[in-house]
Structures are given as structure tokens and as C-alpha cells.
Image (cartoon, rainbow, N blue to C red):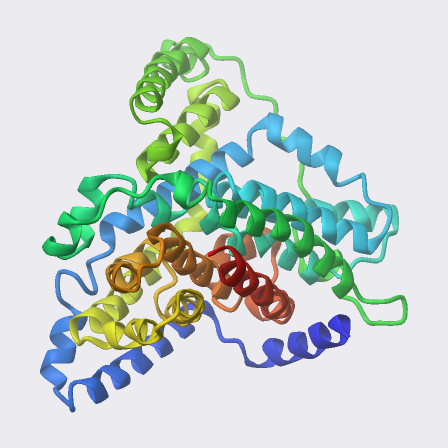
Length: 455
């Protein structure tokens, strides 16, 4: 049944899914139309909200942060040690179902560490798995492998790079986000109430087991048509040319491990001091990026190697750079016209704790289609979610995770974050969305169950 559902949705999305940039334009138009309805046709107010400092250009700082997450994650994923592990993993499966399940398991597991790392590792693993299976005569459906590599984006927000749980660990972050009165009576929310809570640990383990099983169940049978690796024009990787010996002073500096250590050692000391002062419970996005930068530098050994890896990773930022202003404009219209408050505020209408968490989850899923940035969405929905949770007596950590789960859940319908993965693997968004939508529908039952039972 799951295989048939996946096949039908795959055909539907292949025919109907537009390019992510086109989708961003269409979502801008839809949000503008809804904002006009909300403001009774006040076009100047809608346009002002769209291009305000908190609108079209309001996510520039966050866009840079996301580019750094992606670039440092890509650089680490492309380090020789990581590539060696990937090369060994792809030769392990002996069946199409096993190949897809392994890609999904690695993507989900890596996402708990960092979403950017998971996205690139998932993409590289899917590509090399397709290449390995073709070489060994294993009949795999390559788009399903790529969809499996993307599943980490449905689990990342419960991990250590999750925007919402990381943005509530300090009083300073709460003061920036919440109204003054609410911030004054809201204590910082420890990671032991969010990422390391029983709710999230159970949900996370369930996803780590369940998502690979879903991918295995979606694997086409022997009689079904498949699209193999060779059909997508992925270039054959050639060994990197042997670098010419460094002969000048500047070239010796570029390949000097001592130069790398000159930066890596102070970075490592800074990380040590940060964690000694704050612990894991107060981890923030800057600490995550600093960790990736430090480990990546050490893994690549020389400044030249790391610089080349970063230059390659920057190519995946094109979609972020182009589309973040559009999503900033969407965010500006949503907030500036009160549309976001109306949408997210529906969740506060319920009088029950579990009902509130479930409605928050679904409203977050809907908002994510308009504001795909986890941090951007938390800026929109976070104050409303915490205000309502305070009124209803709901644990604030559970409210944070309900928003996080909804945000990551509908990433399987939102191709924005798939842009780097699509570039690496050579497939199109429409090739994978049918499968990711199926995984989303089934996993939604698990998220809701977790929120009702453990929230």
C-alpha cells in the first residue's frame, strides 16, 4: 500500500511541482493576496510590510548564518576522512531496499548533529550509492535514494542545530523575540526541556528507525519501472590531480599545517571556554558554526584544502541568496499585516494541553510552506506559541518542540532546502517530492502521537 501511494504521489509531484524559485514567487503572490484580505485591501500597508526593514531585507543576517551552516557542513562532509567513510558505506548494501534504508538512516542520524552536514552527507551518500549500485548491478530507483538523503531535513529541528530550541536557551535571546512583559516572566528554556527531553528522545529514536523502514517499503519492485543513476547525467568523478610541489613562500603557507593550527587551536580553546561556561544546554547557532569550522579545518589539514572545499560549498548557497529576500518579504507581510498571528493564533483556541500542541504542530507545518527558514518561522510563531502555552499551562519546552516538529515535517513538501542536494545529485525537485510527501504523511502520525502522549 505504501509503495502504491508513493508511486502515485511521485507521478503527481513530477507533473505539478514548479522550480523552487518559481514556488517562492507564487508564495509571495499568495501571501500578498491573503494579506490584502486581512487588511481589507490596504495595498500600501501590504507593500510597506513587504519591503520594510523586517521584510524583504530582514533576513540578510540570518541568510549569512545559514550560508555558513551549509558551507561549513559541506566542507566537513567533503573532508577526506568523511569521504572515505562514505566510500565504504555505499558498498555495504546488497539490495535496492537496503541501499535506500542505509542512506535514510545516515541522513537522519547526521541531522541530529547538524542540518547542513546532514544535507550534504545525505546528498553525497545518495549520489555515491547510486554510482556503486550501478557498478555492482543492483537495480535501484535513483530518485528514491535522493529522497532518502533528504529525509534528515524532516528530523533536524530536534537536533543540536535546531533554531527554535537554540534560540530560547538564554535570557538575551528571549528578550529579542518576546514582548517585554512575556520575556520578563519567561525563564530560559534548557535543552533538557527541548532537544534532550524524553519527548524528543523518543520521537527522534522512532524516526531513526521508522524513516529507513519507510524508504525500504517505498522501494519499487522487480516488475516496476525505475530511473537508474546513469539517466541523470551525473558526471563521473575523476581523481584530483596531484598538487604541484610548493616552491614559493606563499605556496608553502597555503599547504602548511602550522598555519591551520594557528587558527584551529584558538578556535578550539574558544569552544572549550564556551562549553565550560555554558554547557551543552546553552548551545547556540554561533557555537554550532564555530564547531563545524574548527573540525573542518582540522579534517582538511591545510588552508588551501579547506578553502577549496568552502569554495565548492558556496555553490550550494545560490538558492539561499536568491530566495531568502523573497521569503523575508513573505515574513514581513505575514507579521506586518497580522496574518501570521491569525494563522498561528488558531492553535491557542483549544483549551486542552495535548490539543494545543497538536494544533501548534499543524499550524507550524502550514507556516513552514510560506517561511521555510526554521529561524525565520520561530521569529513569527515563537512569541505566539509561548504566550498561548503560558496561558494554558503547557510546558514551554513542549511548545517549542511542537513548533520545531511542524517546521521540519513539511520540509518534505518544501523544496527550498533541497537546492544543494539537487545540485549535487543531478535530480529535480519534482523527481523526489512524491516520495518525500509519502514519508511526511506517515511520519506525521508519529509526531502527533509523541505530542499527545509525552508532550
